Length: 478
Image (cartoon, rainbow, N blue to C red; front, side, top):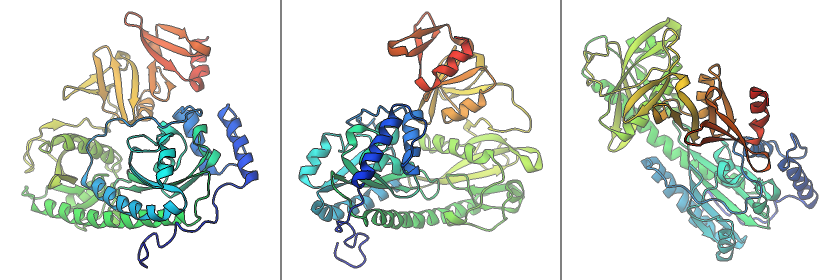
């Protein structure tokens, strides 16, 4: 930690405070009290904190009286890039802990979902932190634990500072926290977060710049890996043995174009035969459906590396619908992108015969009014009237239908809500979208809580949040 090139470079040793001054502390506490009890707007709160409070109250509905972070759910598999980031941040955190110890503070590393993986620092404060579950295997995402250094950093693209009563949950008001997320340089999804916390004391004003430097140095290593991935993608495209004049392109995991031949460049609206190895220089295709299609393909390929899919994609500036085959590209066990072959979907373009089918997100004309679900590795086309309600589990949406429960092809409840906005569906909770035509009973619960029964035989109910209750009453004329 004493070397001139260390990212910490004594940054955590300064003691001039960044905690709130006494008058500001009192004003922020009063603003928090008003906002937590329903005020629509308050003064004297930093914009990034106020926006976080809005998310916690209106979207995530986090209880402001929470005094312990909830335990984390079982984590799914992750990529090699995650391991690279965890190792990098763990090393920095362990080294920094020697200096944080002098400040009676702790350093934590959490994954992209806010689940704490490890903590370092003052032994006394580690015990103090355990009382709030500021410890491994607890979740500090905003949706679980409100405004805090780790969770709010995951929602931001720069380091964040959360001081005392700026925390949404009252049980955390004695903490001062600063965090920064490290993001995938291709998809911009958060991979991990590094956080520094103190109890009833100031953080050094150098902590936030230090966090920014750590994130920047870590992401620089990810950019080097991504550049090499771009080189491998372009090589995989050139190695394809296909018929002459086949439209071919290589795209990364975000759907950005690394390389397209002259035939594909016409369809994608990108330069031809000009590789873009670096993520910062890759081309954005002029086909809005393509990034969504690639994300779905990534999900399938990670489950089945041998998978190849086919679909149709609409090219708006040409007013043309073209068949498309998608094939994943791996380096070892790491998925790095997709090869696209436009044209015939019958296998005469040299790619493998499709083993799966991706439902097109856009076509040249309006599709029938159908919602797509998946059950037993089969796509099911649903009439919206068959859907009783939809429930979100993060970005995964579950459909409760007359044909059983299944996963929606659409990712995210907001997107499904837009798709069904003129089909009689109403958002009644941050996690629930209900078909008003299938509601059989409206039940009143404790303190005016409402529940919707969509199947009176099985007592299948959907909760209605406080912010959506008036809209529901208006919809039913109650």
